[in-house]
Image (cartoon, rainbow, N blue to C red; front, side, top):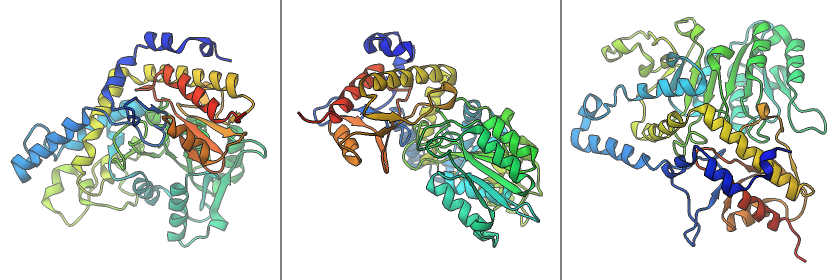
Length: 425
């Protein structure tokens, strides 16, 4: 058990060098005005307070300048999306030209698969995980159908071993080795949404590339949660959302990575739109499409400025703290949570998230063994001010985010959970 589990939560909060960041966020309140214990950033991150002024600035420019806001104002709208490239590149370990903010995650996944899932001859198969998030599965199935193929013939699903909850890296690599030249695309999650398991992006990408497959990653639960090195790890593409740990609001504009080796590959098919046109020629309305080099070349339409504005404050917070410091606090928080849970509730729960720090982020997923079970656990926690997340049939997800969660939050949450899971005498 981690030594941190024996420390006093208030002392840990007093020593926390990132404690000041909490003041940058709005913490939801209980009916009596107390702060909730918000452990649901794996679903929706909290609102940065500065978002209000950032959106108001866009509204003011729109009101005062109309169409001229595209070219003038505090932050003109035509180049607006460019400001996110550098901080996002730092966050995901990429070059600025390799990342772009656009669309939503599943739209970006479809755009990427249009370019990188190119079944031909014997190379037609897609490898995914059996427990893939439903939107990813639907996207993959529809892409297969668009190529006139059948999932029964080309879909490969990797799964945990019987009796286990998480994937073994070597088992995934073994499937890749056996399928070899039949693989057209490998699509896996950076962090598995249900269990919170981190997958080895570098090694699994290299395994796929050894056999000529394209490799893509869904980083919805990874970005802003765990350190990433996309450029060096070398996947062909990655997609993610910004409304979880990146705190950019419900349905926020998503992100996309395309490795620089594809930067000027005009042979790649793509679904094109005018905002992906080479920027210096975009307003010439030419009949032929010449994509901007890099990830920007996959854009379709001009960005929704009001939906992009909330990302400014969040990235400012990440930039102020640095991902290394946030990761240290994240591991301390989850280590503290795990120790408290094992000490006080070990016979009533099972933690399905791996214990190795390299294999998890902020989230711990708990299987509830005792009664009450089901959604009644989440409902009882919510009534007591603990905001977690339930996934059927028996998983409670708790995700202490280092931007705003405290060790005292965890102490209190475990006490409340213990009360919920203790049968009435």
